[in-house]
Amino acid sequence: MPPRPRSRPRSGSRAPARAGAGAGAGEPGPAGAAGPGGPDPRRLRADDLRYLLAVARTGRLVTAADALGVDHTTVSRRIAALERGLGVRLIERGTEGWALTDAGKAVAESARSVEDALVRVVEAVSGQDEPSLHGTVRVSAPDGFGTAFATPALARVRRQHPRLRAELITATRQLTLHPAGFDLALAIGRPPRSRLVTEHLTDYALGLYAADEYLTRCGSPGSAADLREHPLVFYIESMLQVGDLDIERHLPGVTPAFSSTNVFAQVEATRLGAGIGVLPAFLAERAGLRRLLPEEVDIRLPITLAVRREAVTEPAVRAVRDALHREVADRSGDLLPRRPARPGPPGGRSVG
Image 1 (cartoon, rainbow, N blue to C red):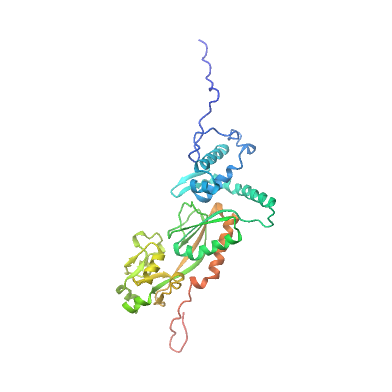
Image 2: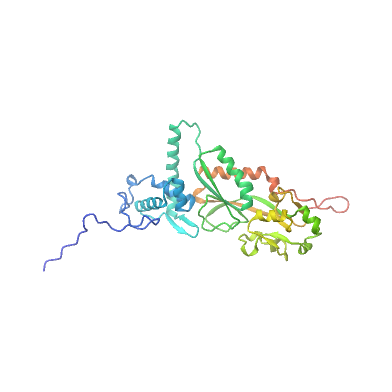
């Protein structure tokens, strides 16, 4: 009995492609798809690298698409094509959006030089003498600090580099262990171990503040123990995401009577006489509130600056980081008002 002939694929048929970012799953692999000898750099589409960088910076397909002026299916398709061409997975979905894999981080790091080269080409033909920063830098910061310090820093960088887009996301929360959706993050407290590159940016002070109208109506506490007789204004304990702001750590046994997740609401409530606020000095003193018991209640907390590892060397990210350092250095007196002098011992000598 003669052997059966081997079946041949029908003309035009292709093996199923590996799924990439999502929408590109099942599309035919490009001519430069990775084979037994590895990917052929001559056949890779360098423009696909821009799509990978956009997702790396934003953590969202839709946001990356907006930045590139395309729809999100195009972003997904182009990254899937790049993954097939290289034969590796470059991005993966996490709890906070899309994040680069280890291979994706290596590719993105090299891709930035390609992107920078394209910008330099444009600047060369347009007659610009000095390179201008470009792209989008996204910063995550607490409500109060983000508004009072990150905003002026970003505005300063934008004045120097009009082609740079700045985005500020405000929320008082812990640094995420799986960074996505930002280039730099500012957070209250010490960061947990993570894949972020972190540094101490500054400390800031919180104290007790009240409106003159409240003090006229309800009187002023003589000591921290007297705070139990006054309504306190602070964060909602059950919704607090930053352990360093736990009121029990700083004022044991005191429960807020007016609470909000937003520090500006706390400032406004205090200004309207709802109670005594535990507020950042840089916001309370701007609102004209009066400091109470400065010798007893003077809370100092750190602000941590964190950068995604793959974004550390980006010129735009470095420029924003430098601007943040300059902003807090120029306004250190707002962040940390001078500690009140403590009474000295008999004889006039000071202590502490």
